[in-house]
Image (cartoon, rainbow, N blue to C red; front, side, top):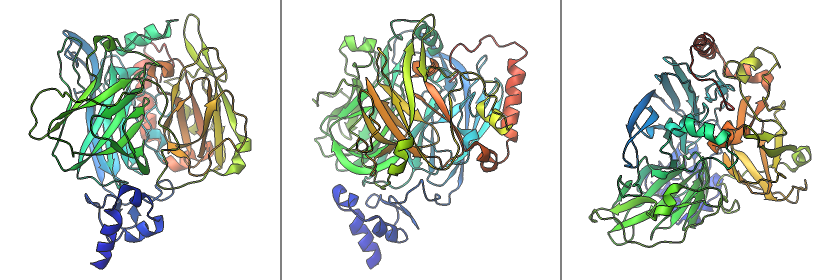
Length: 574
């Protein structure tokens, strides 16, 4: 009993104090306390917020199973604009179902492609896929697309915990609705009473994404602008139709909100009038808590925050601001409030009249020195001298392409990289943009752009969290002194600065073939991607049976090669 009281005292204190608890002391409490509203740092015997989930196998879990079916759907606009739009939806809804599991669970998802003329493949954004790269869901890299009428089973271990999303990685398909959210329950760096769940935010186009993708590829003036935004699948339009998403709270309680940018081409800044954010995670990585009045999210990024419902009973704006420094939206000229509503129990049904902070319009990530991982790790300085350079340029002409080291990545849906690797061959398709990592050492890669045309790019890595050890303007000088190697920010998506460089490090501890790409959907479709082929000689032994993989490719070949598909691949394929 005394031991349990000690655990409570340790974990129920202030957030700043909790961040200073020695990891060894928290580990000793694991067997004595469980995860409750006042002890969120706890989880189970031997596991807590201080567990390094990259270094330690997760706790034993159960198997959770979900069934997803993707169909062609025509339905009214999600923002209430008059008329219908063609969608491709999961289980008929937008966003798709939230997949929820616990740290250590095995997640099984059966995905049926019931679309008429499209392949598909579902990527689990940020999921490490340790020793399971064949389930990463990237057609042309880790699988053949799922053919119409066929089903694929994805199976992977929840070795991390936190918030993320899943989406199609087949061309620009997720822009037409093939996406959903994921929650993996685990410990946290801040206490809270209730979990309000996911809050996905996206740009919204009244025209189907595949149509716009073709326009973007052939436009010298940039891609078309979105027409609106959606927060959790809904929003009002310029004429006042539609509705705002609403979060309901009770005065006196603390709440967790899981904010996700699921956009095609937009950076957002968000705030909540009268309610500062206590920030707990950056992507999947728990951080030492800090308080912020607003947060900026690039595409693919997530922040889990805690808010206190300690204001007067009323309705409050959850504001969404636009990164106009790197994009725009047709709705901005209307003057309507973008966002959602936080509504206290007992408040009216009226829209809020509250005021808030001026939101940023820049497309720059949160300060990486504020996002300090709770579990410390160090990047060895010895690898800095072996850093590999990746040069980024834009190529215009009849077709717009983004080049990495002079080449756009263009996959072959019929001959994915993993298939060629498992066959023992190095005869990969042209434009594969493969960078091999042959040993289990640490690697450092830096991306630079000296091109005349500059944009910020949200860079996302599959199969790993990278360590963001350096960034700046101009070109990197290659020095150790310019980098932060001592517990740098870790996450799976970070923004490459305009006119500058980005230095990333990670260990080759997950054999497989992993894509790194810009998460602006148009840019990925235009080739801004590469793949790391990691310890290729070990892939077969760690992933086990490939019977399902082979069956998927046989099914796709049976659909594709008779020539009865109405659409050919016109972009990168991812």
